[in-house]
Length: 173
Image (cartoon, rainbow, N blue to C red):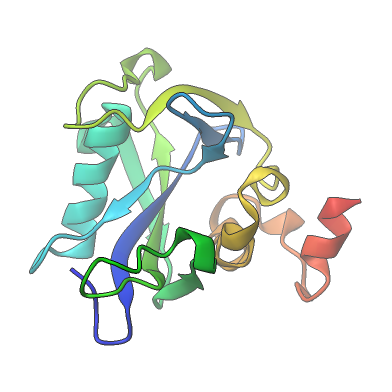
């Protein structure tokens, strides 16, 4: 499902533990890491999609997590030209996402990667809250920053920058 501007509706999931670390997942067969995320089906509520994607990508269900919050608005990113599938219609130029922040309340041994039709990840680890901004693929950094700054107020308020404008640059150093 692509909207009239070419964006695919999607949910992003920041899963944290009691120490404020976040779940960082390795894409299957690649040296590429990201948060769990996935598309919203036609007429599917974003929160329903989030729990479905959580299950498909991590094996975790609603009873394994506590929902802490979500972004207020859609956050968008454009795909670089080389990633746009120009032969598919309607043309998808990027994603618009609602981001959720969850806390794991069950044993981390519940994590598994064989629940969806197509396995997305083959490894994971806990990382410091801001680490993903340095490690995620370049074209997702701005949307990650927006989501993490907004949702960071919930679990790591002391580390959220008051002025986030130069924050990403400081992280690169």
